[in-house]
Structures are given as C-alpha cells and as structure tokens.
Image (cartoon, rainbow, N blue to C red):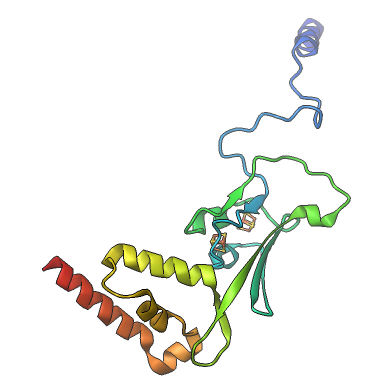
Length: 184
Ligand code: SF4
Ligand code: SF4
C-alpha cells in the first residue's frame, strides 16, 4: 500500500497534475464556457440574448435615444443560451478562467446602440442596426423590387402603433405579391 502511495507521489512530482495558475493558463477543452462578451461591430441590438438569459445577467437600458446592453459576469451561469439565441453570432463565451480584479467594471461586457423613432408616435423603439438588418434580409429574399424607403415606411413603426395601423399584415401581403410574381 505504502509503495503504491510512494509511486503516485513520485509520478506526480515528476509530472504534476496541476498547473501553476495564473502564471500558466490551464488547458481549455473544446467549447469551454467562460464569461460572455459582445462584439460591438456585429451586434444589432435585437435583445434576443437578454430575453433568453435565465439568470437575468443581461440588462437592457434605453436612455436618450441609446440602447445599452450589459452582461454582468457575477450573475452569469455560463449556460451559453445567449450565444445560441443570437441571430448574428455577436455574443460568445470566452475561453477565460479566473479573472481576479479589484475593478468591478472588468466583470461587465457592454454594447451601445443608436435607436430609431416610431414615425407615428415619435417614441424610440428599435436600434438603427436592427432595422437595417431586417431590411437587408428582406431584400436578400425578394431582391430590389421593393425600395429601402418603402420598407422603412412599414418597419419604422413601434409595436404599440402597429396594432393601430396594422402595417405588418400589409407588409406581408406586399412581400407575398412580390414572391409569387418571382416564382411565376
Ligand atoms: S451565458 Fe447564460 S447566464 Fe450567462 S449571460 Fe448568457 S444566457 Fe445569461
Ligand atoms: S448580442 Fe446578438 S442577440 Fe444580443 S443584442 Fe446583439 S445581436 Fe441581439
């Protein structure tokens, strides 16, 4: 028994099972889940990440025509739901383990967006990039048969006003007409 213990002790003395962290970074297996970080270049501010976060680690603040999304690592459970839900791959879990810091702002990833106003009530309701992304996607499907300004006319209306003017059913009808024509 004692011989076995001695053997193990020598084996791990020669080849330690641990690494002297933080001088040496540990090995990260594939898909290691560290804290999530935004890519401000590609994020469109759609809020899908905040809506699916089960631990409320992502806050959305709308102020003075800006939308700010912040993920606080202290509340994050590293479940990766935000990464899965993002339609453009803009939030990713980093391969980082152990981030000691005396500054609490080191535990936050933040992204800020300009917003657009509803053309009926004047309220800020979506980000500029989100509207542009939807227009780009529609035009990729239907080509350039409907102008950007016509699409903006349909899309620059907040959810509350949409119920009053029913613009989304009319947009769907317009897109269906265009797609049916193209199929013919
Ligand atoms: S990894 Fe999970 S808990 Fe952390 S911010 Fe994303 S959805 Fe929320
Ligand atoms: S990170 Fe992705 S899901 Fe979250 S707001 Fe940006 S684009 Fe939307």
